[in-house]
Image (cartoon, rainbow, N blue to C red):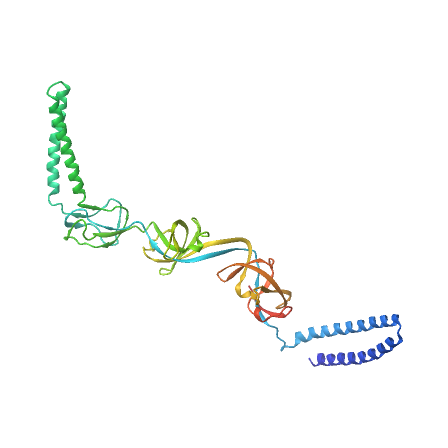
Length: 390
């Protein structure tokens, strides 16, 4: 270190002495008025200064290698790469299902039996409960006997008529009696069927509301709740300014924070009506629920992809410096040697933003390296120390 300092002082001293002598010699040449001598002297002086400059440059490099007190600004960097840039809209939604119903009785009577329990999986058409028919089945049995007799009477009357025996009025009376009795049987069967509570679709008994032994009837309390967890969907209200960018079939990432689950889906329906109260329109996203962890009314967070740009550049927002008139700049690394480099201030044009990234429309090239953290204190041409490579 001391040797470098001595050499530096010697070079400066010699340069000063040399410059003094050259200045005296230059004055004499100028006084002579000889053009050729003045041009030759200029070349000589220029060569001398170039030589000193090269020596000083070598000294600066040597000092930089040995002087541990010399520090350049510490920065992190980001490599610009060709990528696909996407932007998403964050919307809150709610899980719904069309097969989530309360089952009500259609017949007046005592709930004689409940054949299922809460949480049980049932099939469509399965009998869930029974209501006491109050003697309706006995009445039906009597009517069915009467119908059988009326049918036999009609068939015999028809055979006699075919043999041209009997009158037509007798045949018509027998037919009318049979049809009336048949209609009464069907009506009573329909009433009796209402005493059997059947599952309208396959699903899970979510709640038993009315217990066995209670009197039930149309318009009264519900008997139970039946839910199908297979076909689920998320409904959400989207602000009207996204009407052009949100469309049917658009990919959606749905997150359920309560159960820490993320599923991918697509928009299955887009509403045609804008709510004048909150200026939103409805969308639906069908979601798979094979494990049946997703429940009705569960809160969901939707990330709807409303913009995609392929073969573009995207850089972190903290790489960008903006001046007072709105121009945007980044610092591009040049002359990279080890963990040191110089920077060049470069103007860029940006596009859309998403997730801490900004789309770059112009100003950068593929594989260029730019300053990420530490850009706000730099100047054009400054040297920096690189902390890491991203």
